[in-house]
Image (tube, rainbow, N blue to C red; front, side, top):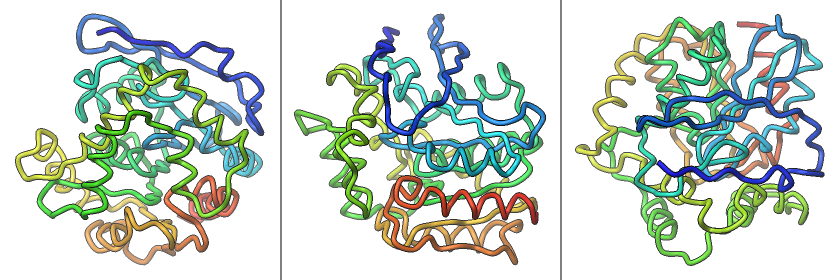
Length: 302
């Protein structure tokens, strides 16, 4: 496996991002090692929030939330998935599988960092991977906040819009990550913010992971990830620890998945499920401080 590493200077001077980088290494599943980057803010002994980003962002997405969470006495750990942010980026799309993403995060968060009693905050692929970790490692988690995410099994037809997104990811000559994030927000992003989302990808050779993610979402019952996700759903239907949905009102990609989680997961019953108004798919960017306050209240009361 040939992995690229984004030069550090690409991350210099990012707006409202004063956080120090931290790293661990994990096995790449082919005999080598991959470096995983993560943020770690707050007291080491404080309750831990695991903030997981999705496609095609990185932990920069959580910069508005982290100060609110830390000020509330919590610890915020925000990893960059392999292929994103300051984490290493294998340069072939075939290097990336759903199973590998789960195992890379399991190794980084549990085997290397030994994190426990976690509150997962998962958005987009942060939920697709995070909910698998919850289902397969329930003793590591205390509660879940699901934000614009789900856990597809391929048993339901995906929307035409999503299938078009899959085609775009494979066919577009330039995969403009910053522009994609901007298009998934309701507010207008400043040029320096768009540039920060582009920072991990100096050229298209770094985007194999970002281009591959749409193709890894299970869209048919025989998808390679479908059996593991069905097994995860079986575990989630027995999950009685607290689960909160905090979806936005202007995300056509995940609309309705909040109700699926509310109805299927026992721990979601009777919770103060929240709709973040005026936010798009990337609600951490549009309404990060508001989402952070929702998370803080949930941790304090559950």
